[in-house]
Amino acid sequence: MAKKRRSPSPPPPSTTTLLSRTPSFTCTHTVEITPPQKDGGNLSGWSAIGGCATEDPPPSNGSEPYGRRGLYCTVQIVSDDGDDLVPFGDGSNTLVLISCDLHSCTQPLHKAVTSHLSSQYSIPSSNVILNGTHTHSGPGRFYGNKLYDAMTVSTHNLLFGFDSAIFNRLVGKIQGCVDEAISKLSMGTFAVTQTKLYGYSSNRSLSAHKNDPEYSSWTTSPESPSFGAPSSPLLTSEDVHIDPRLNSFITTSNDTESVSGVIGTFSCHGTSMGPQTRFYDPDWFGSAKVAFNASHPSPDIPVAIMQACCGDICPSPICGPLGELNERGPRPANFGEALKDTVGKGVGEALAGMVKEFTSSSDTPLAPPRGRSKRKKATTTTATTTSLSSSSSLTIQSATHLWLPADDFAPSNILPSTIPSSSLSLLSPANFGVVTIAGTASGGNAFLYKRIGMGYPSNTLPSSHPQHPKTPLPFPASFYISRAAPDALPLTVLVINQTLAIATVPGEPTITAGFRIEKAIKEETGATNCIVLGFCGDYAGYWVTEEEYDEQLYEGSSMIFGKFGLSVLTKRLRMLAKEALESAPSKKEMLARQTGK
Image 1: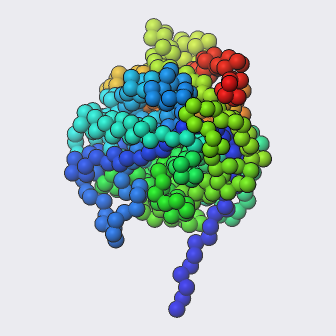
Image 2 (image 1 turned 180 degrees about the horizontal axis):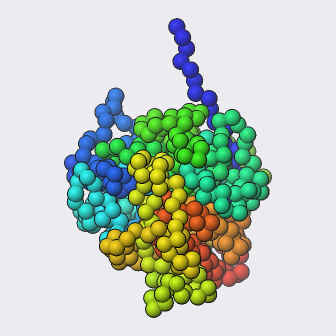
Image 3 (image 1 turned 180 degrees about the vertical axis):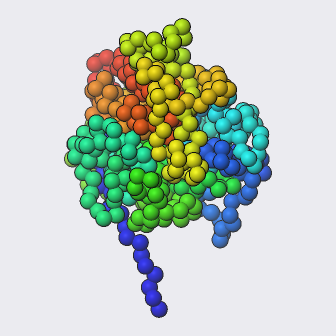
């Protein structure tokens, strides 16, 4: 009997590095948030080409494992804010990370959740990060802005616009998950670790990335995300010009002396199920949860993945200038369950391996000294030799800002042809390019993609115009888009223990866009590491570099505010980072937190 051929495996993850570790009160909790399938809700990422939740998920043998099929919200609370925990005092040293199986966080959702945390627990909104995984098979019509609520109309369901029932259900579920997590806080440890994972994601817009100066040193510069990329016949250029960093936020419990929850971050689109999906699905993020719990010795602990910078990164094995899909290693070329489970398995098992390395290190106690209680601060603990940051007390510096893009628009009384060069850093009223209609190699209109999807720059706008060289959608589409686009975008920068920064982006940054933001925040804060998370605060489309914009592939065409959007966004985030540092405690306060005196 012939043996079944085994697919070759990608290179294993790199050695795990400990970025931060702190004794804290912690809890990670999860709840399901899947809307009823019978609602026939439009799918957020695929609706424009027909995706609609009109069917029940395919039947399975027995019950589905946790997370594989349903949409979930996972909340991680980390607090070192006073002796009594409840109330939280001023909330300045409480961190809230929320991952939801949604296309993105939205401004109304962000406002509802942060207002709840502020009013009920005195936790400032600047200490809260709500991230959408960017699954394309989640519900639509909850955005709260006319543009993207309208864009989730489907040929199977012509309803469009904001759906208050879906929105209110999501808010109630997320707030309930937060309340439950806070009620279960107990003494433990909060740690952040990092590894690099290849073979489960590809760059779908390599020709645009090649325009970036960073391209030539993407795998050779020690500062670049993909430095040290392994050499393997299974890895093409598309497979190494990615952001391979897999981060993990780990909480442990002193009571059980074990890991109590994990939230990872990775850069890869939630598009493995494909545009023909007819039911709500978490995409590969759900399969990652299954794989993690199958690999971890303590099954069924809460686990989730936050989306990072996936603007040009997809789970499909892209190869070649025409964006062909070629089977490579274990990844099949076609959308569907096999691709979803393959990518999810790779990420989930790598995440479990990171947790195992953290807990098994002889130099890393699983939990801080058991003598610590709510009334006594911990003594200093020893970090592993790979640790870049270890503190005996949690310190959070943060700032948030509601950015109004219109504040940065070019003056309306200046004709495009006469915009002075000094105004080239300004934005334009929102509009898409014609390439947006064609989609991408990893999902879209195949007929149009081959004709205009591989780049369609033009000279219909003068070179001084902020949208040049985009071929803009004509009136009346341009009129509607400019008035329906998001007009208030929450931004957040926070720094943990003065060495690890987190910055949020309202939409999907490409890997190079995220890397430039990362460098800017590190320069401004002095932090050793920075994690940039997209799909937080709100959704305002893509964020690309000026060089990528000039190529006018799907990502550049879908950057609604024009060529200089990333520069203006980075400037705003730099200002926030400076503001966050100004919230730093005094040296006397820092010493008191470190020594417990």
